[in-house]
Length: 129
Image (cartoon, rainbow, N blue to C red; front, side, top):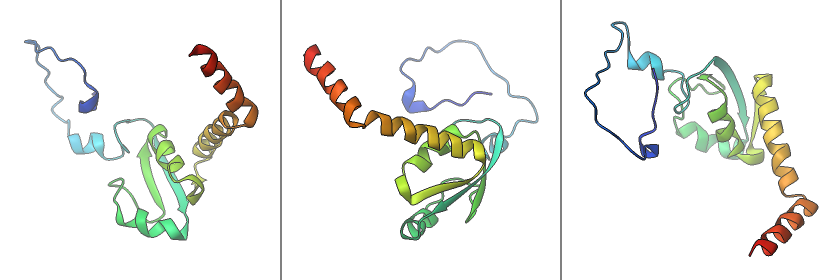
C-alpha cells in the first residue's frame, strides 16, 4: 500500500490498469498510527509540553491515538517536525531515538545561525548576485 499527499501530485495520467486491494484491507488499520502520511515502525512517543502551551495542544487532536501524555505513531520523521515546531515549549521524554533526532536537528540549526556561518553564507550570496 502507498499513501499519496494529493496536493503534491504534479501530473496524473489515467490508465486502464486496475488495483484490487486485499480482501482483509481496511483503511482504518493503515491510517491508525500514521501521524500524517508516513507509515513505518511503531513507536510509543511521550512529549512534555510546557504549561503555557499544553492547553492549546490539548484542545487539538493531532493523532487519533493521542493521549494526554503518550501516543503510538508509525515512524518518527513527521512527529519530529511537529515537536521542533514548538521550540523550547516541548521536550521529548521517549523514545531515545526521537530525542537524538531532535538533538541533531537543533544542532544543525545552531550551526546555521552561528555568526561565522551566517556571515559566510551572506558573503556567498552577495558574490552570486
